[in-house]
Length: 177
Length: 190
Image (cartoon, rainbow over all chains, first blue to last red; front, side, top):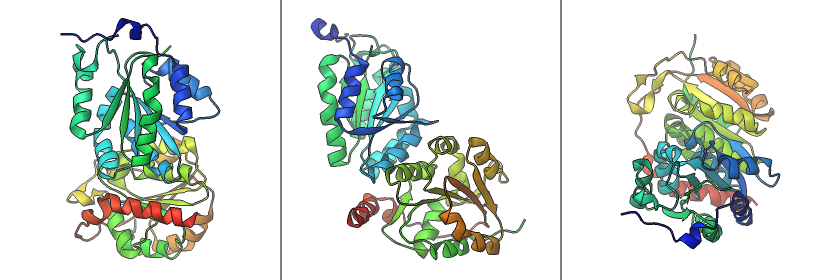
């Protein structure tokens, strides 16, 4: 059975400008990223052009865990912007740094080729279907950002991450315009 | 080529370390902690290779404090891309030492795929301009003071012998308490 997102919600197209405003309002100063085609045009290019944010382009996703943890010692907030495939690659670093070391790690993860309007657990793509159960097993809080109505989740998620020094994952369910 | 002993290198380094944060990993972490156990140490365990990335984050987050990374050769091979990232970010306050003994010392002493890999050459090709290799202790001792004052990012290879077996102290170095101690020390210094 496919779980479909309410039609009126789905009509509110997710925009990169809304995500950008939300992460800046959450006092994110650094964005650490390996390019992800889900967020490339709508979010990463605008971030690269935004003088209020410093973009650190990394070579592999696990680098982001060390950099974000290090930045936090200087009270600098970082957003790790990657694709779900990269998050899977970095799982050991997430386990060590975010969970065992209890560092504040905020990840925004593009769900590559998730079907529009379909919940991640109901995706036909097994790479997508695994993501939320894996995060649940690891005890990592996660939120789906699939429309403009979800933008309000971003600020509290970032705030909780840094106040409680724990990881959070914001799953981007479709390409923001 | 002559080789140095890691603990002797670190004893020389310890004489120069004051307010710097030292990021150390695996065998380097155990040696450094035995020589200079202090709250301003940050230990990178659990994800081999991330010491350089922790160091970059600390250097960017704390631009007025010098960050010293004590990496291992096996560890760095797992995160060679970090050299490119560091070169691009170019933090002036980061100095990255790599202890090269050609082995995965913390995992039984097995050899690296290429024990003689030219790390300074790789770092230079990655875009880090200040790259050094030391295999003589007296030369290292003569230059370390200036090296720690120079503008970063700096990359330096320490050609060392494999160290003696040690008793791992993961319970102390791996847990969140050491990270909390570093945060408290930094907060007290503000």
